[in-house]
Length: 407
Image (cartoon, rainbow, N blue to C red):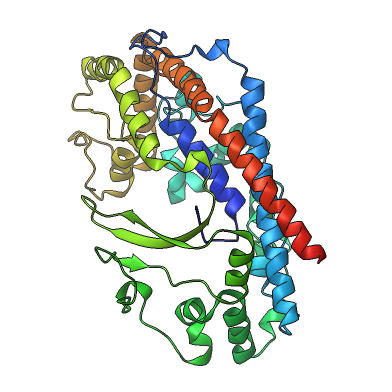
């Protein structure tokens, strides 16, 4: 069942699908990228069919977001609330269409093509004041297809000539009226937690509040307040009920409990994603060792892949540019590391080129690419039947929601 968030679920669903894709990049190939071990070669399956499955899942999720909000809006207006917080009711953009299952690779952030590495390094210089003000920054944005004005507009920047949505009418309401709206929207418990400051009724943060009325074997660090108001009416009308689900817990430093109600998409099986990521690391372990050895031969010893299967170059370069050490496991900077911006930029570019060349010379890039594509295919094929069943279930919920709206 899905967590109780109603706004922005399309973005979450897309992120989850991307996370699943990245995590599932190591099952079914041997270390050389073949399909020995039962993997499905990426070229031997109907990618177009699976891409359409992903897009239909995103479309259904967006439709469900919209119909939930329409039901909640009608509930609010039946209670006399006609001015709404547009943070929740502003139209969401259509979900982006997925065109291929292979538009992302796990190494994209640190194993660049040599041409890009020679020109821009890893792009870490762009974090700095000198980098942002340099001519190279504009060239880098153009190379990546970034338009600063478009980005500002998308984020609602005043400099871009406007906001993402207008909320003046709601903001003009008195604090008490706005608080009453939130109580009607998602219930007293959440309103007091999130909006109590409007009426001078601030609560302790939920993680510090007394949640003793909830029957759980072990008390999580955080318990989400239970939905009420029109949100609860919508949940009760469309779904089988609420379930309090603990995320994290044994063996982890932090745990939290959230209310779920939507049928979960197959891509939300985080345990499966973690397992597949582990298999991915096992499959490319030999290639990782070859890449690290290549860097050592070029005078860059001490590198090791992190738990995500990446070289921690960003943390390394953060220390170079800021002088601030971090807790991540990467080699120490050389004693003669440059102190000026131009020297640091040259240092970064040289490192990026060495990594790119080692990725090609050792075969790491090709091994990881093939492993990713093969196991991505295997992953989506493995959830295909379950995904179609989920889609049918959501279509049934949408039909019921439409009947409620027309009643």
